[in-house]
Amino acid sequence: MLVSDYSLIIFTLAIQLSVGLIILFNTFIYWPAFNSRGTIQRMLKSIPLLALAIGIIGVLFSFLHLGHPMKAFKAINHFETSWLSKEIIFLSLYLGFLILFILVTWTTTSWKRIQKVLLDLCSIAGIILIYSMSKLYMLPAQPNWNSVFTFVSFYGSSLLLASPLLLLLITKKGSYSSQRALAVLNAALIIIALILLPVFINFLQQNGIPGQQAMDLLLGSHSLIFFGKILLQIVALILIFRSLFVIRSEITQCRQLTIPISLTFASLLIAQYFGRALFYALALSEGGF
Image (cartoon, rainbow, N blue to C red; front, top):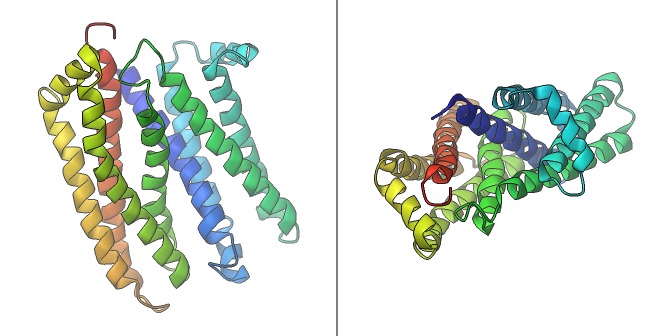
């Protein structure tokens, strides 16, 4: 695999993790239904700052893929026709709103409405950003990419990685309801991913020569990565179910959650890395790729 392929894997996963972290933070942490105002204020600084750091790491790795990074800004001139242009613009908006949100929360605690508006704008920009990233790969010349499964992969990675990471971050300060909701969400997402796998396999089998080449790749030279991803997802599912039995009350011991949730996140991170590597490998087949 080329250096540019590694950089694309890290870029896409880092940006999607950052966006997922903000969306779930906005849903499960910022809303008073899940946490008290005091708890929210304690988390306002650390979690968005981590999401920003992850996003910046993703941007830095994108520069390794671009031969001339400064030329990427010229793509903005083609906003109406280029999904790359849309990706750059919404990435800039996402990071811009996130930086503004962080600045407001670090300088004052009285502008709560402005904080919520900025967080909502950041979440919306992030959702559109992932949509733009998906559309960028959905090309007629790439039959194995040109399907709804690209949307499923990109949005799925965002939430699959963000839910255990956010759960890990709130093991000390989060409420029982937010911990429970995130654990259930993560378990549901893993189950959906496993259920959709045979559906995707069937799609490839019905996708003519390109799909058959992809199947030969998955079950041949890349079989270790393919089955390794599935095994890691099953391990993560077992770990998150164990965590659900641990989350029983407000006085849950932090150490009882930290280890299984850390292992869940690590398993899913490696699984998603394997999955994204396979995603790019599907475009390296002969016969139209």
